[in-house]
Length: 128
Image 1: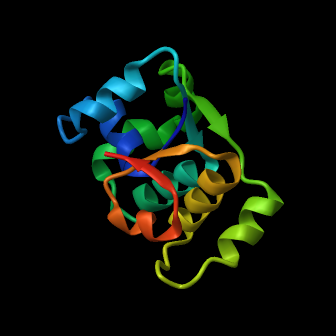
Image 2: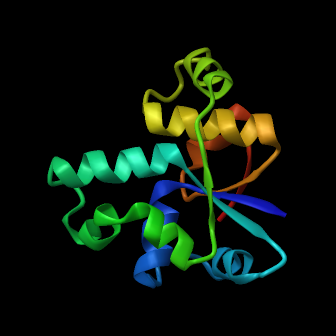
């Protein structure tokens, strides 16, 4: 299975947080699954850390690529198609980072790991 971690799920996994559900922890830890981190999450972490909204994620923000590699996750770049699809989404949710995750999840048939139920309105497959 191919999993795409929402930004908060990546942060919580990296921090070893108990905020992740047991089913999510099992899915991420399962070596049979490919775990992907979107470039949108790197952008979101760096931006929010710079703005002081993610002070607890400083180590992650300083070396996001290294953090991804340290967990044997894979980077997922943003394509022009992802951006166009995200921009065309109905205005149910205005977060540009989430729009990219929705577009990537739908176009690549991924399972999105997220606590956010609003993603369900877009028809994504979500696990929490």
